[in-house]
Image: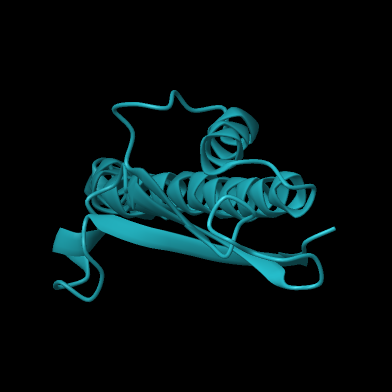
Length: 140
């Protein structure tokens, strides 16, 4: 009698694990790719912040605007043309900034998400995030 009950139980649960696996795999994959996307976005934000700081530092030692832009792109590891990074320089030595005043470098970068989070979250965030950082240093 006990063997008969076990056989009936085993027969009825044959496809259960496969169905559960098929239902959970998409959720786990979306979660995995969202974690990777967040990590890459966080890395990009740190890079933008460091690039703004590097540009402000070279601007503080009386560099011209083109040298500041080149330093920002070099420290970001991006080519100067064809990228989605914008550099705004205020009060540099070339623009008439005097020693004791501050040079301000603002870097804006459009980060494109690799996962379709915008579609999944109902449009709360777009497919592109704008990362922005501003650095200010006193002219020497």
